[in-house]
Image (cartoon, rainbow, N blue to C red; front, side, top):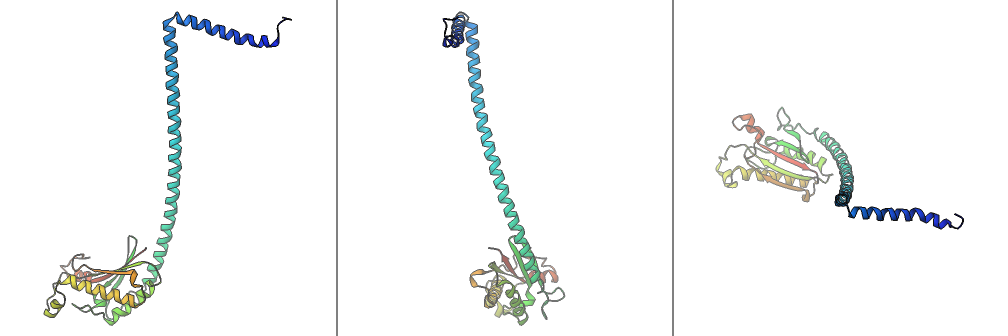
Length: 243
């Protein structure tokens, strides 16, 4: 022991391990079953490593999916907040407008003007009798006054204003009116929408925000089989749509 260095003592276990491995390998070479077993274990280890790598990739993908979902939730919450704010502003504007319901000489018991919420905004529904005489498109004085009040509440915004004219299903009978409106109620409803749009523009709403259309009797709100239904169908709708 005195003649053996420390380095030799450290090297001994490594040498023994190498000799043991060589002996084991020599034994394996004479035992085909053991060789096959080692081969199978090596294959299983390789498959396990591959599965582990695939699992890590899936976990990484799942983590990314979770992060994306969290980001989407945050965006939706922000949109929901913005939507709620927009709805609150919409409610305030409708409340301001709801004071304009009674029109002297034109509205009847129900006032002639109502307000309805629609996707993207709201609409002001004005009965035809408030604005026009039967079969005509010239605005009555009461109608002009009502439109002036409505325009005053709308001109400060940036909303799109869409004016749509509607009639009942009674065909135009007077010869002079038929000559003026050769396409019947469609013509009349469009002319009425144009007059209302022009009035709103003259009251201060920028023309670039305003459009119009006429639908005649083809979008009824009620049954044209009754006088009350016909009255509800004769109307102009002012749609206020957020940009």
